[in-house]
Length: 193
Image 1 (cartoon, rainbow, N blue to C red):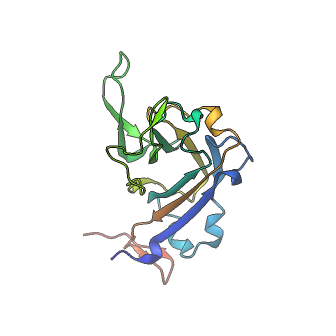
Image 2: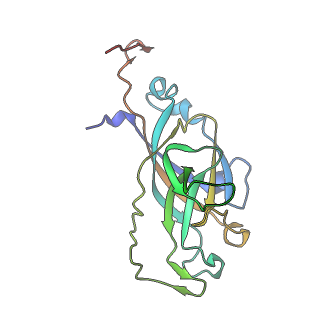
Image 3: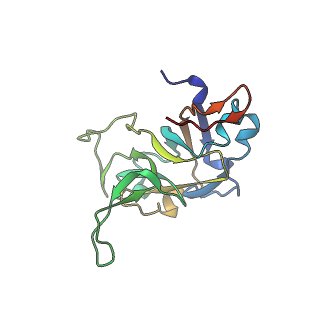
């Protein structure tokens, strides 16, 4: 079993963003302050990367809100980064010769929207847990965290859907154990196999 001391949970309310923005589609949070109160600070502050999983997402929009339009899926993205082990498909074009590219999608949430005028309560596949798994990203506790809401095509959501709206998310974070770190003496050792 993985060490419980390496797990952290982060609850974010979009209303608490850095600038007090009332449009929740592209907002920032200062994550540095977490290190002031985190247990095991000496371990996590120097970690280059961590695993992050979207566990919960709630947006202040009714499922039958007309502003959802043709959005069948909401993507929660982290702006300004690409995750090294995460990819998404993209359309071929004269400038894009590949169907896959690195991605910054942290999680996906189905809206239940089938098309512009109808909702489907019986999706071929839909799960209340949304099946979001871990993604690898740089240490989330360092600097600014930019969160963006996009549709299934990666287009930022319309103002009509996100202005004066709030969302709440819960993230689960895991920092892999660093066997070269000596907690007793707060030192890192070079391990040679």
